[in-house]
Length: 134
Image (cartoon, rainbow, N blue to C red; front, side, top):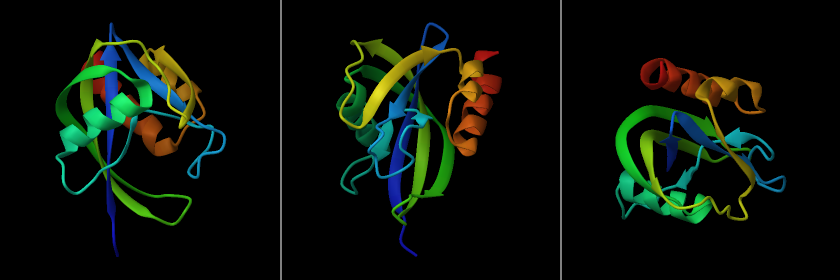
């Protein structure tokens, strides 16, 4: 079975994290809340791929810290992915969304469980909160 690679970032700023809402026309889980990130090219490192995805999706500069979680999932299209989530510190910029997302929020990590999202991502954000935000 073939797996493609993905990277995600939990971007933190002043005790809050950035979450983005997938476009209603997205081919995978439209309308759900998530953290920024995306697919990874084989020619680059996970950190460089994440910098690129964050720049493209929300136009922010971040400092990528440590890997936090490794995950797997099957997209609605049938594609399988293995992903790495990194903890990131906000450095500069104002959020400017790409066409992939329709909204964003800076939220307390505890509030993520109230948003429409995937159970696995809710668990990831809860684990982040327990490790970093308490």
